[in-house]
Picture 1: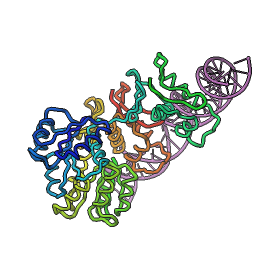
Picture 2 (picture 1 turned 180 degrees about the vertical axis):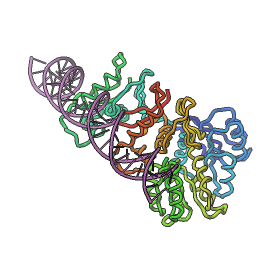
Picture 3 (picture 1 turned 60 degrees about the vertical axis):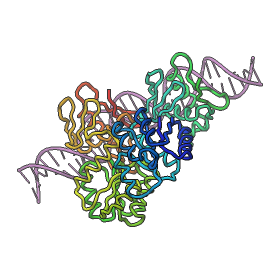
Picture 4 (picture 1 turned 60 degrees about the horizontal axis):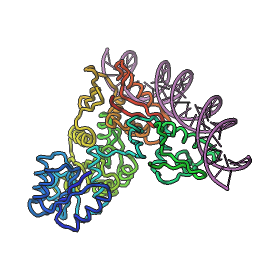
Length: 222
Length: 222
DNA sequence: TGAATTCTTAAAATTACCTTAAAAGTTTAT
DNA sequence: ATAAACTTTTAAGGTAATTTTAAGAATTCA
C-alpha cells in the first residue's frame, strides 16, 4: 500500500512517514502543492493525505486537480482549521474524509483503513510459508490448490499460525480450539495434527507443523 | 440489511419501522441517546438513522461515540433544523449524510441506498455469476428469465450477494435478514437456503450458494 | 533396551445439514 | 367478513460429514 503525504511542516511529515512505515505502508512526501500534484498524477497511490495550507497551490486546488484525472483515489484532508466552511469546501472539492490537527495517529490510521477497505483491497489472510488461509472465505490454499478443512481442522491451523514460531502446548490448544472444560486425557489433538499434516502434505514432506516433544506443537516456516 | 433508528418520537419511529420493514430491512428502535449508543456498539448495523434532538446524549455526541469504535457504519442524521451549522457539525461528528424533517420516505430510502451502495457494489443491480438482482424493481433475473422471490428470500439472497466471497455465519444472517439477536435454535435459514436453491437452480446444478459446513453459507461465482 | 510419548488407523458417537410436510401467520380478493 | 392464496416458521426423519474414542504401532530419549 502506497501513500502520498502532501505536507510542508517537516515535523508532521516526518511523524507520518515513520508511523505509517511501521504499519507497512510505502510513503512519499511532497512539500508543496506543485510537487504534490505532480507526484499524485504521475504515480499510483492507494491513499493521499493532503494538508489544507501548503505553499504553491492551496490544498483545495490540488484536491480538485487530482480528482479530475484520478477520480477514485481516496483523499484525506489534514486541516488545522476547524471552521465549518473549510470542511464543507473540502468535501465538495472531492475529499473522502478529513482529520483535524492535532490528531492521534491511531485515528488517522483507522480512517486510512476505512478508505482502503472501501476499495476492497483488504483481506484477512494468514500465511505460513506457502500456505495461505483466507479467514473471510474460509479457504486454505497451497500450491494454488485448495485444501478442504473441516471446522476443527481449520481453527486448529488458525491457532497454530497465529502463534507461529511459538510452541503451543496441548493445554493451550485444547483451551483455544476446543473448550476449557474438555477431558484432559484425550488424544484428539494428536489425531487432528495428523489430519492436518496429511491434508497439508504436498509430497515433499514439509508441512510446517513441528512436534516439540514433551511440550506441544509449533507452526514454523522453512 | 439491518438498520438502527434512534428517535424518541414514536410517530416517526413507527412510521420508519413499518416503511423500512416493507422494503426488507431489519429494524431496531432506540428511544434515547444512551440506549441508541448501546445498540450501536453492541450490534452490527448496515445503516444508522440518528435524530438530532434526543433525550440522553445529544445526537451529535452519540454520533461521535459511535464513530470511535465503528468507523465505517453509515450514519444519516434526521434533523428538524436546517441551519448550515447543524449540518456541518453533523458531518464533523462523522455523519455520512443528513436529511431534513419533514422528509419524504422515498428520499430517505434513496439516501440509504446510496450509502449501502458505497459500501458494497456500485450499482443498484447486484450480480452473482449469471444471476442479476435489481434492488429498485425488486426483480431477480437468471437466463433472461425472471425468478419470483418472496421478500425474505429476496433479502437473504441480497445479503449473501453483498457479502459474496465471504462466509456468512448463521448468526450474521439471522441478525441481518431476520431481526433476531439472541441465539435461538431455529432452522429457518436452512429452509430458506433450500427455497433459494430450488428457485435459482436452472437444472445444471449450479446455484452459487455454497455450504461451509460448521460455519455458514457463502455466495460465490464459478 | 525399555519407558514414555507420539503417530496412525479404524470404528463409534455425535453433530450439522438437507428435505419434506404441515402448521401458523399474512395478505389479497371476493 | 370470509375464504383463498401465499409467505413464514416449526418440526422431524434421514443422511452424510465431522468429531471423538480407543488401541496397537512407531518413534524418541535416557
